Image 1 (tube, rainbow, N blue to C red):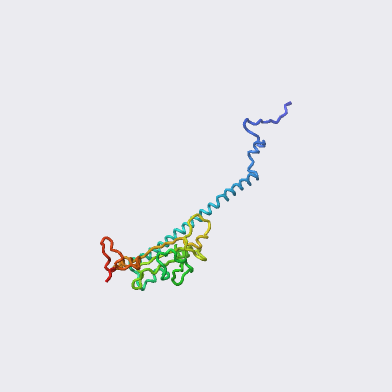
Image 2: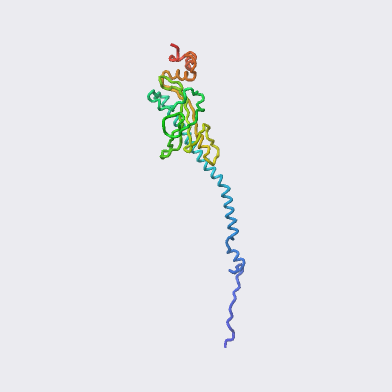
Length: 247
């Protein structure tokens, strides 16, 4: 008769291993506590709030610089278009309206950069104080307002042969009383400057150059009160242009 009863075996844990329900194992299986999550959220919010203003200013400055570059290109295009017409002698009494509108007759050429700012925005009768809308990128929407004007200058047979010209380009958001002072290109986070000041301003002098009287007309424009023998000799010849000589 078997007198040795069955006894349950107890297996001892191997060295280096911990029981699944031991305190150390439970600590390793735990995730983030609620306080740790809140601290992490607060840290992310602080970092985001710290860099957000810099990002906004950076984007605004980039947009402003891009607008200024486009405005300058537009102003240069207007200047060159007029220069080609004048220097080739394509302006006649019948086509003088293609030139920029003239300022008051007594407005001095030397003060071309001090001409009044536009008082009217939009299409309409040509005027030195009107800025017309321009679609720069041909997307169907107006991007800028452009003010073009000139002085009366030197006129021969009803055709301006030498004059001062100015071009100012304002943003499409321009409104209210406009200024002639250029908009600042420093870092900015708003459009306040672009609403009243021109993004680009160019001033230059135009003169015909392919006609026999061009030199005399230019000298007369530069020295309106000079007598013919006071205009000055031709370069490298020491003599006056025939057309500038007294009869």
